[in-house]
Image 1 (tube, one colour):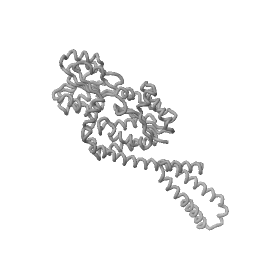
Image 2 (cartoon, one colour):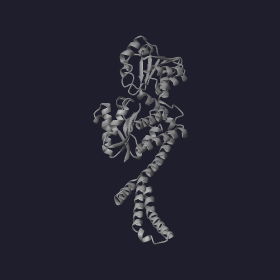
Image 3 (spheres, helix red, strand yellow):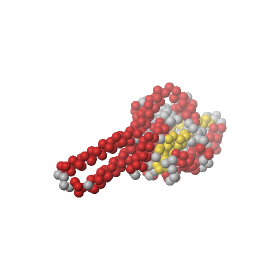
Image 4 (cartoon, helix red, strand yellow):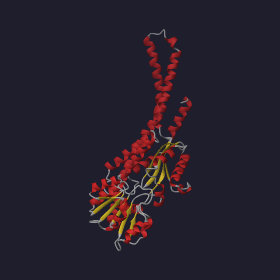
Length: 419
């Protein structure tokens, strides 16, 4: 059995395709069940965020597993398989482990070192556990990935600058406007991202923060924490018409702000510009709104470009995290190898002990005339001889575990002893 990581992310596909392949929270259980039911997959976790959709799986055969995952993702995105094949990357065994650890460490994010990804990795694993699609292999892998991510953030300064996508969105807005002091800002979406943006806006000097959300109680809660005002979605058009900046980050599967809505809002504010930062994937705002006079519309593609500028002076931090990732990949490989070899070695030694006991039983009547201490000597002699015979093969099996040679030795042992 091997581990694979197959998917696509913000580096490999345009935003238009990434948003089509994003799996929202309501559909994740169904996608997990579909993948777990495929012939070549035995354990599955799906990590779907605004930056990536990836499947981590324990597989029987790589090519069969690749086809299973490609087909499942294609069906979920309503795309033909050939429309996805050219964009998928595939990592196998150690490379799959390294990829996940890099993701957890913040190296593969649009905003280097951002903190949200660690929680998203944990949430993906938690859901797979609740849905029963993981077992010992992926449990070990994801537990280790979270440890790697925590090391990256405690032992380096990777997260000491802009630490989240929500912070980066606000920083990009300030960079575009020059300042948001005294500005009226609307935040659409009150999840983790929305709350993060609202908090950052408060610290950046926004004059008023208005929070709109599909769940009213959550909008009130977040607005209360940042000293803002909650509005219902039915009032969204009116507050946008009076805003200087709109930031959006809902998890909606369809557009929240239509072209016509913005056209009406802009008609009520002639000659007054509006900046929109839409970091939702799929997008909340109709991309065609960028053509409206006075509207500047920025999305995740723009955010990635903005974040790249801040990356140039931080290569030392990247190198430090990569060293941690390499160290943790090595440690994980050792732990996994020992766990994989241990059951085979245990079964083999138990089989040998059964044979020893059987032979002693066969000669029991011939040994009964011996004094008890002599019978104890025979017992110790056979036990010691067996231990010496098994010692060196055991050491070599443990030492080669997790390598092609270890697999060959394991297969030979199974064949020779019918294990």
